[in-house]
Image 1 (cartoon, one colour):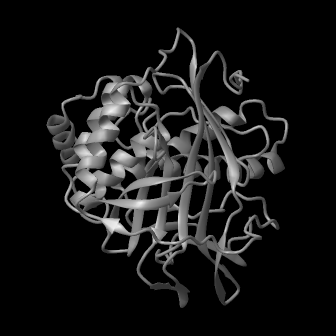
Image 2 (image 1 turned 45 degrees about the vertical axis):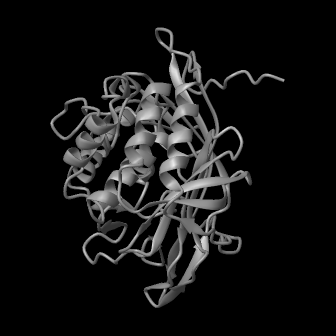
Length: 360
């Protein structure tokens, strides 16, 4: 990877002179777990390539590299200011951003409709059935994702979008073991998400990086849950309300909350100021629905949680630029899709890299 000739930066970010591949900034909306995994894969990718050149047959290298990778991860999440730039884990000389910039029609926002919609969504979520993992099983999550970022080659910056791609992750309920396969982020075989922190300790699950077991212990009273979210994310993001909305979105898209917790999360979201209903939104899989959203006044970007209009099933999340902005001299027009993430499948499987059996 040649960071000197081509630099990838997320929309609305700032260049860091000391760390060319990382940004000193608050994590953008909805990206805590996403950036966690990309950060781990980037460190793993770079150090694996470097170690392979020195000692390509070292059978202990994978274990050794996970310690610094997790250490960097824990530090980044703890202070909330390091965000991995999209595309950094792509092999040197390749570029996945080959298509046009992702755009969409901006749906109309209805501030009055959000509480009623979220109440209906909460009731629908509470009535669903969710299987429980058996001993030794893993939570499998399959999504389709794409994002838009500012790419700099030499002295020329431009706005580009990655192609839509499938992302697969496996995690043990306790969060101690995991695996990620994502084109452009990992190799074909993927990378482990297992590791320790800078002191050699196993990282403790928290709201920004929860395990399935951690989610099961969260309060399901909406008021208590929202108080916990505000307290534990204090000082993060672009204000407490935006960060609370971001945190709930992360839990919905990057994990598998129980029906009771999902219902509580939706009721908690209804209490966050600035949350609106959007009458029309499309997820990364092309499914149209209704959305619950909030505008980040700092970035001019609106994060939308998309639901099926009839069943109110959660489909995915996207972040859309709704106010014109500029980054490194590049104009970011309203309607630009900054990030889109659709849930395709969630299931419990018996082993890492095992795919669930599809019915029909």
